[in-house]
Amino acid sequence: MISIALLFAGLGTVRAQTPIPVKVVVVTMFERGADTGDDPGEFQYWVEREKLDQVYKFPQGNRDLRMNAQGVLGTVTGQGTAKAAANIMALGLDPRFDLRKAYWLVAGIAGIDPADGSLGSAAWAEWVVDGDLAREIDAREIPAGWETGVVPLGRSKPYEEPRRSPDQGEVYHLNPALAEWAFQRTKNVKLDDTPAMREDREKFTQSNARRPPFVLKGDVLSASTFWHGKLMDQWANEWVKYWTGGRGNFVMTAMEDTGTMQALTFLANAGRVDRDRVMILRTASNFDQQAPGTSAAESLAQGVRAFLPAIEAAWRVGHPVVQELTDHWDRYRDQLPPSNR
Image 1: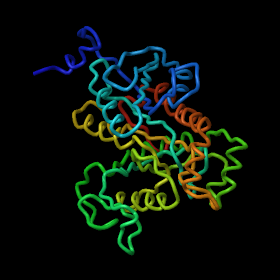
Image 2 (image 1 turned 90 degrees about the vertical axis):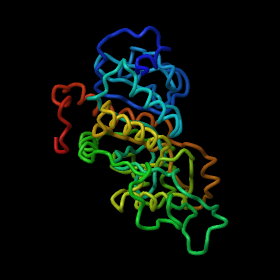
Image 3 (image 1 turned 135 degrees about the vertical axis):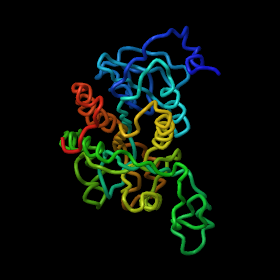
Image 4 (image 1 turned 120 degrees about the vertical axis):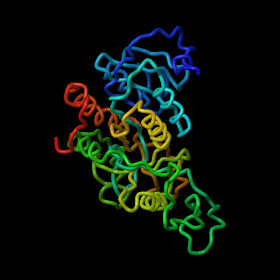
């Protein structure tokens, strides 16, 4: 049988050594250029500010890994669920690292539902729902009375009960106590605001959309299609309610998180990671729909309007959690953080 170590022969000569214990893995999804010194993507602030100076070649993944002396390891998955799943699986099987006690922080930008939050806001998720695993009829051909052409796998109409059980990766439930702990530690973090963001949010009527950026709890719909528009937002809300049995609330639209969660689930089954140590933080670079008086197409063409504030928010909200875990590793190595600490 071929050992895991031999599968990584492309990394160079594999020597018998103790795997490096990792305390926190920071998972980002894209970087626009170099890891440091140019226009930032999701990874750059983590590299520069957490001093992720040790580079580990990672040809089996999307981008080289980086680590600091405090035990924080950073990775960039690439965009989309397929790349995320492949990258996280490759990392989880890498014999150089011991990830059994590691906490995982997914930190990236997203679109936000204006009913729940504003541009530049940050949301800790408890639920991640897949928006790709489905059956679909083109909207121009859906029967009268259907709200959407998207149908759960194994069902014949939208939101048909009972939900299929067991699911096939349509929904992932994160550790709710850990999500609450992270939220409580960061709920008062001050986030950047800009005149452009204020101008954009004043176009919306929802009270949360008009607020300055803030930290909240809210769930993720993960789909590789960058969808946009008021009607798509209505589908996302109902889809999340359906797959969580009404317990989840759609707030953020992202692309990679179900791929990441599927890989971590398989790795947890193999005893290589602890899925109860996973956190997902998404920050709002754009609203997921048009403002009143604007079409969805016009809104989509405007692009991502709060990119840099959202990039900043991901680090600013995620950093206190990472710092707490590493500074008090003797407390958190073997015992998960209580929600009331």
